[in-house]
Length: 450
Image (cartoon, rainbow, N blue to C red; front, top):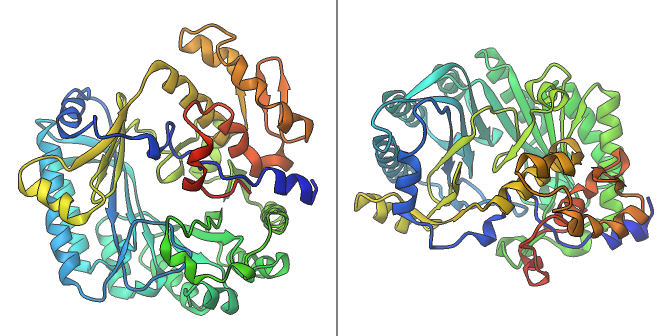
């Protein structure tokens, strides 16, 4: 690897938590189509449920999420009332309680919900759905919002996996992104969660933040490893101030270069491997006995809007403003505007504002991209055969890999494509060669590839 190669492939590319990606969703898929898709789900189909809580107590300048800042509980309470209306309306499409294999609360900061909020939400879920005994119930938390009462409530409602937002433990880096969170606070919250029996813990970290260095990130990882989480996600900071205006508060002169970012991520991967963590896809690391690591070893690892997952459910239903769902027919997205979201539900309509119906070509390319993102390899001939398409169907797309192959970032053997371990960070660039929708004019929608 060289600085020149890192810079050459630092062009913006999608993160591929879906294919086609969200910028290509359109309004032709709306509430009526969504209702048809939901009612046609086979009765035995297990569900995965995602709930978006778009509120935070303070603004983190690096944030790319759909959220708003509030110090008052009244807007949150109104939103939760609307969310419960959506749960009831979606469940009514099924005509009975459907089995749920996975629940995920994201945001925003769902940990700002009060204990009674959490209990009422869980009661609503159990009233309308059948939660499987082995279901994973996960939540993303801001440790700065967690006290013993909230930790107890999370355990009480059945939460069994928690992702703690950290980003970096260096106080100077924290100040540069407006996310001051002492190591002692994070350690205390982990102790609270474990004390209440929640043992499955993830830490969310970042590289590429302002003032970060290889050495500084190594210190953060030392602290993270000492906390002994099951998983560590090491996301590359996506600097897109043209989309997220608050990111303009970050001093761009303090951001590392593409080469520095690659060095940070590569050094971190080696450090985590030495500590016994298995690399998972693009940016995750897990203990060998973690379900994510087992899924990767067994070839069943998947990628969806929450990232890498071992979730077995193929039907994902998104609840809340801006939430995205994925069904056999295609994708559905709710209104991002909270007022429009609430108005649709007040009128008794599903709050779907746009989506996309998948074609056979979409399904094939989605499968190829998911395999690359999850396994770093794909057998294109076998993939084409499984979709009843000619073995050479994707040859034109594969030809687009020539430059990447010349630079040692991908290996092509006939119709088998392999991303070598040292090029793991460039797997999005490889996947982009199979994206039939990606256009140069779309680049401003995405973060740099490294």
